[in-house]
Image (tube, rainbow, N blue to C red; front, side):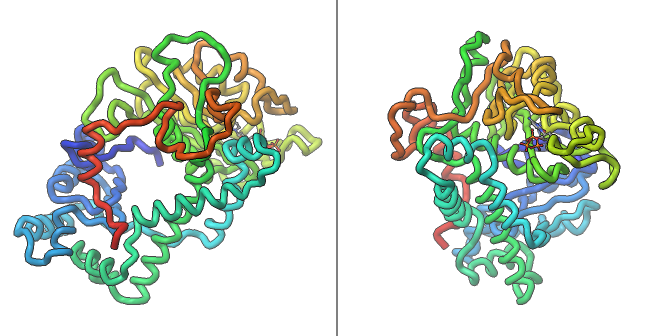
Length: 422
Ligand SMILES: Nc1ccn([C@H]2C[C@H](O)[C@@H](COP(=O)(O)OP(=O)(O)OP(=O)(O)O)O2)c(=O)n1
């Protein structure tokens, strides 16, 4: 499986339309994942492109349908659209479905336990000797609240009504209804726990590391919320690792010269990966031991493909020399990967640096510090605030500068559904 794009709706277009514009008939046989059931305008084009499966989150109907829920006598158009969606669904070879399999039972606990091991939490904990990782629990609670209000519908009756408008009557009866809600809650919990591992905390963020010279444009750090968002994507990937001990995720994005039609602005997805044994290998094909094992022959290091290596290998777009491309890695790039990242023409690295400068028997992290020609942004306390540990309202700032919302953002925001108040 390979991810070929990540898109979101813009002021003019729905996410499905953007996916079509960006990939055209390359969408053939692809699986598409939507945060809400697509409308007929998107669906007809996607079906026409020959996609394999369309999965959607069962809580967020189209805006027109949502109006219908609160005002059943409303628009004829909404009803027509819902019918058209059903017709397109039944007449196409693509499966249109709610994809929400139950998570394996230890998943939530596993993620909670391992999230604190990522560099981002470790770095904060180390910077404040009296502080334990309890701040992680607080950050996680905050994310849970935020994500619950974004993705869940607290009122069961309202949820049932929404499911009915979406044509999912069969999920309104118990035990299907309560199972569905439980599965949705579990997934939200997992997402919140992962997101909290790159926390909004004080003045911690991604800031330039070292005094290396690169060109001015490449030295510009992304806004902190964007950088954190991309790192959370990388962290999600890290949980897919095949290395029992250390999961690492990497994701590559690039920026076009001008703003595109995508809700991601000029940013576009290039590739992603996590550390794993070569594609196609079976569980016991390769050794899994680490440096502590005396016999070097049975250690994992010569076999495992690093997160960055997989992201580079399975990228779906070229890395263009005249564009600002950036890789987000949950751990410091090692000596094997640093020359690969530079050689591929990537302009910026966002990473943790807890292991930077470490030399182990089979893997070392010595080259990252000396790397020239690629801008490095590592997770640290803002240099502007190193001496002043102020922890009030960090979200209102990016790179220490007060953030203002663009008009476009405000308009787009008002287009988004907010079901949290139900
Ligand atoms: N930027 C990086 C760094 C590492 N890895 C992967 C390769 C190995 O699967 C694992 C190695 O991680 P560690 O250096 O932490 O080694 P250990 O897993 O042995 O842990 P430690 O030595 O910290 O006990 O991470 C990766 O994909 N990308």
